[in-house]
Structures are given as structure tokens and as C-alpha cells.
Length: 535
Image (cartoon, rainbow, N blue to C red; front, side, top):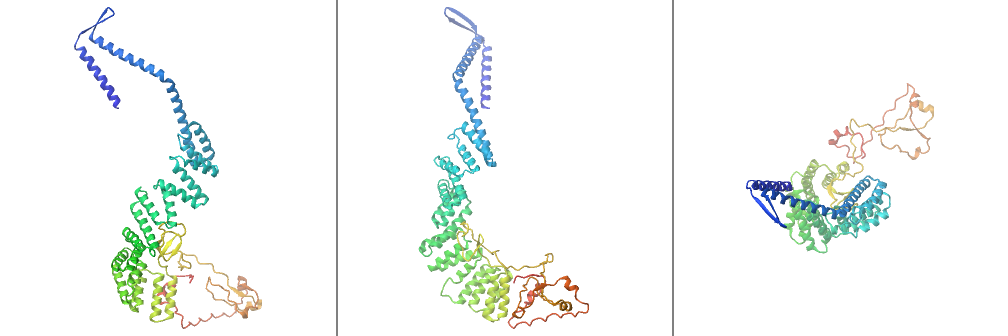
């Protein structure tokens, strides 16, 4: 656009100049070699412009002829390069589609047309073709040659890392990932693998440096980086809690500052403060974490902050926690445990029942059973509460990759993933109560087995065995060991029953044992809707 405007400006200037000359007539006299030439001023101006144009054209022709060999060679070189890049593009597409034969063919074609030192992608296509052909050893050699080229080093490390992962060599994979992370911490695959290696070896300081590098390169968000730093600092504090209390305290306090709602960090920080007799600051940390999310470890540490306190003092501290987070199951359970220790059974029972109403789970029933045994020693009610605890959902615990742990850990014991444990109710529970529904198909009823008897005796009466579906029928005693083989009752046996056969009265209900708690009146209404129990 600028060139067009410049050309128009030049043409406009020439037009103005010729118009100006036309309005001012004059003559021009030129003496050359004894001759005089007299022309008008306009003709002289046109002649000068024509001579300049002719000189420019001649110069362009001479220059074009002089540069023609270079121009022709450049044309063929560009054409050759375009063909090479076309082959390289087709080969990359073929490698992505899994066509090893076409990828190898295009690799050779691109290598003939383009030098590998000019285009590093040829080396990548060559390695990919080797992988598609199953030549993993050759692919590894090609990836190793890339390490010498600064431009291809990260690509070679990535290829060697994937090959080590394929072979299951975790040490080699982490070695290559560490080298890549040292050069480019913004690479997610290298940083994550290196982070797993550092945390697995307990190098918390190295892991913290790597997280800081990730944060500086904006690979991870600020909140995620703070979460990771809090986890790593908590792990560091746990590791140094017995060897270097001051360093552990500094790490724990920083972790709690980054994530005040992270219960493990609050517990470790408060524990270290309590050891140094700073009960006030440690209690504030636990209270802030309790407001964010109540946790039983926080309640246990808070109520036992001062070892010399009486049981009533611990009960008062538990009630203070309850005031901070009302209408929560953990608050009621904390007060119930403290009241049980103080032998205030009415308060303990009331809070335990309140916890059951808020969140029905196993621990609340077990605590209520302890209260019942300590107050009344009624074994029947205790058994009833224990049976409810077996059927109730499990208490929350630290769960990671199917592993349930009572204590928090920074990494998963299965995968080594950082911050894998989460506080939730485990779903891995055998023997859950199966509630029946009207639309649920009934379980198949097994055939009822009866002892084989002579035909005449079977024609008289048929003995019925009253059993619940799904229970075992292997109730053989010593006095029946010598009887004949047991066969199931069939339709033919019923056909042989005479019309005047006497009916057999059902067996009388067994007398309930004195220590049998029986059926809870609260559960009597629910019993009709349940068809099958594992317990």
C-alpha cells in the first residue's frame, strides 16, 4: 500500500512539473562537436526523462543477466525444499495415523530433499517411524543422538522418558525427567515425574524448589501452588518434629498460613506450639481450622492441649469447640467423648444421640455403646447398638487410591502421587446392608432338602424344614450321620401325598434367651421393607 501511494505521488509530481513547463515556454541551445542544437524546453525535458528511463532499463537487463545463474539455482533449491517439506508433512501425518511404512518412505524422501541439520523434524520423524516398526532400540539411539543438539535435547529426553516408562524402568524415567525439569521446569510431564521422585525420597526442600519454579513459570495456578506448598511443608514438619523442632515449627506455621483450613498442617503446628508451652497460639490455630472444617484430630488435640487439665476442663474445652461449629456431628461427638471421660453420662448420651441424628455412622453407635456399658452395663442394649454400628456407614478416614489410613500422609503408598489422601467416608466396605425394594427381583430360593425314606413312609407325611432363604442347610448331627442320602423334594413326591394325610403343625417359636436384646421398637417399622440382610 505504501509503494502504491509513493508511485502515485511520483506520477503526480511529474505531471505537475510538465504542466509547469508547458505554461512557461522557452528554448534550449546545446553546442556539441561544432553543431548547435536548439529545442524547446518541453522537448528537452522529455528527452532527459527518456534517457534516464533507458539507462535504468539497460542496467536492470545487465543485472538480470549477471545474476541469472544464482536466480535459477535458487528457484530449483526452493522447489526442492518445498517438496521436502511436503514429504515431511505427509510423513508426520502418517506417523500420527500409525502408518509405519508410509512414515518410513516419507522419511527417506524428506532426508534426500532436506538436510537433517537444517530441519530437526526429520530426526523426530525417523524416530517415530522406528517406533512404529517396533525397532525400539533404534528409536532410543536416535533419541540419544538428539541430546547433543540443544534445539532437540528436550525432545530426546521426552522420547527416552517414554521408552523408560514403557519398559517399567522408573529410575531411568525419573532421571530423564529430572534432566528435562532442570532445563525447562514448565514441562508438566518432567515436573510431575520429578516431583514424585523427590517426594518419594523425602527430599521436601527439593520438591518445594520445584513447586516454586512451576509457580514462577505459571505452569500451575497460584491456589494449586499454595496447596502443594502447604502439603510439602506439612510433610517436612512431620519429618523434623523429633530432630529439629524449630525448623519443623517454621515449616508448619508457613503451611498453616498458606492453607488455614488444612487440618494436618494445623494439627502439626499446634502440636509443636503446645510442646513449646505456647498454648494460646496453638489453640487459635486449631479453632480457625475447626471453623473451616471440624476434624476429630483437631478435637482430640484441642481438648488435651494441657496434659495436667482435669476431665471437667477438657469437657469445657470440647464445649467451646461446639460453640464454634454448632449443629455438626464432630462437635457433638467431641463433647460426648469428653463427657464420657468425665462420667457425665446424661450429657454424653444426649450429644451422641444428637450426632446420630445429624450424621448416622459407625463411630457414633460405638460411642453410644461405650456410654451404655459404662452407665448401665446392659449387655442387651450394648449388643443392639453394636449391631447398628455394623450396619451403619463407616466413619470418615484418610483415603487414597483404595487405601484407608487413620493418619494423613503426603503421598499415596500405591501411586506415589502427591496430596492423594482426602478425608471422606470409605466406600470399600464388605457386608453392607442390602435393603430390598418392591421392584427388586427376589433371590432364587434353593431346593429344600429332606432325608430319603421308604416310599410308603413318604406317601404318608412330608416333613417340612423351616429355613430362611439364603441360609445354609448343613445342620447334621451325630445321630443323623447314619441316615440315607438326602434328596430334594420334587413335584412327584407331592403327587404321592394322599388326600387324607394329616398336616404337620409348625414348630413352636424358640424361647428368647435372657440376654437377647430382641428387636428394637424403632426398627420394627423398617423390618417389613427389608428382605435380605447380610448381618
